[in-house]
Image (cartoon, rainbow, N blue to C red; front, side, top):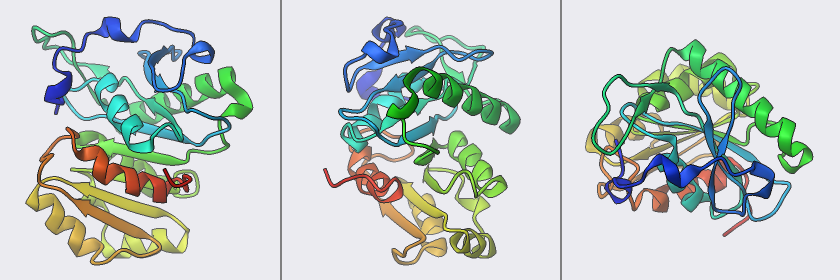
Length: 236
C-alpha cells in the first residue's frame, strides 16, 4: 500500500546520483544489472550493516526506503529492490510489485553485488536484516526459511507470518535466526501473537493499529526498535 504522505512523490526525486557521492538520508538510484534500478539510502557513518527491503504490490521502492530509513535513523544502508512493473499506471506514475520468489532472490543477489562492488568495506559483511511488506513480506519469509544461514534476521510487516509454524520457528531459533513482526491490523496481530506470545531472544512483535495494512507513519515507531534489535544497531 502506498503511503498517503508520499502520494505526490515522482521518480524525478531519485535521479541517478552516484551512490558514493550521495549524502546520508538521500534517496538515490543504484543500477542493478539485469533488473530495475534499486533505491538506496546511505548511512551517516560507515562501515554499517545492510538492510534489504522488498516492497508489496502496487508499490514503489522509494516510498518504503524512506520509511525504513526513518526507522534506522541513519545507522544502516537501506537497499530497496525495484521488483517488476505493474501493467497499470495511475495518474501519479508507474507502480511495481514482486515477481516470482526466484526473481526476488536473483534481484537481491544482483543488487547486493552492485552495492558491495561500489562501496566495498563500507558495507558490513552479510545481510544485517531482510525486511518485507505484505506480498514482499511473504517473499522475505520464504527466503529466510530456504536459507537461514544467509538470512539470519527478518522483519515482516503485514504479511508472511503464516509461513512461520511453531516447528519452523523452533528450527530457526536453534539456527540463531531472529524474526520480528510489525502489525497494523488485528488479524496480523493475532497471527503474530500466536507465534510470538512474548518477546524472546528469537522473536519480537509490535502492534500499532494507526498504520493499518501499510507502512504509513507511524510505522517507523514500531519498525525502529525491531530493526535495532534485528540488526544489532547501536541505540539511537
